[in-house]
Image (cartoon, rainbow over all chains, first blue to last red; front, side, top):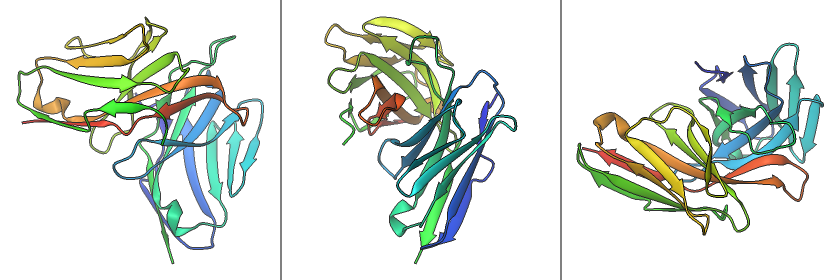
Length: 116
Length: 117
């Protein structure tokens, strides 16, 4: 049962434009969400995260938006660069009270291609 | 470089065999996680260890086992291998808070690609 879903397997964007990657989840217990980026032959690299007490978190060109009522989050990359071309995974966890060591549930990923 | 080291990078073996995958976590991280990524799939959680003790179990087969040693490195043992066990196996370790204030960031190794022929 896929509790975290990324319904777009691929996205193609021109350099300089905005990339929007979407993610939906089903488990209302999830309270912490992360985005990872993965290049071929490498492990996933942490990009940005958001707690359920917030609806937006920004880090440079990357912004994550969370809509709890819709159980939806999105990652915005502005402006997109060719080096951003990678697979992006959305992940979620249900933090144990007083602990930050919960397992992550991953989506299947979205391949982003940024062309010049 | 995430600081998480996985060996070997590639492993080719035959059905019915047994292999051991090794993971060294980031310095200071007490928690180690194992994930499996099959073709076109997301990362599936297998098992978590915290300071030597099993903490959580996911969809890990009975043919698979893991342990975390006193020096905090971890090993994932896969036995009676089947063709369907061919996958990328990732290890991750975590800290509770990084310098940017993010919680539960898991840092991943480069993975071990297992091919069962």
